[in-house]
Image (cartoon, rainbow, N blue to C red; front, side):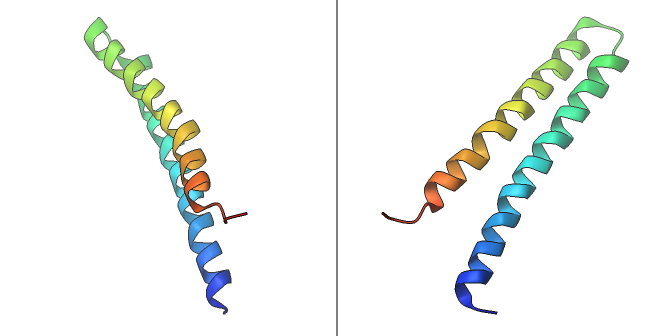
Length: 71
């Protein structure tokens, strides 16, 4: 495999992994939010879910911007 193709594949895998990690965190937060009986646990679940959504939206964009080829 050519080095450019291998690099592109590794970068694609990193982008997809960041998105999957964000989805897993959001699901964890929603589970905590749904199963909690007191408000501190509900607040923790909501905070985890919101931060995971931010990670899912921001991290892939920053990685793609960082890896963009020069024009």
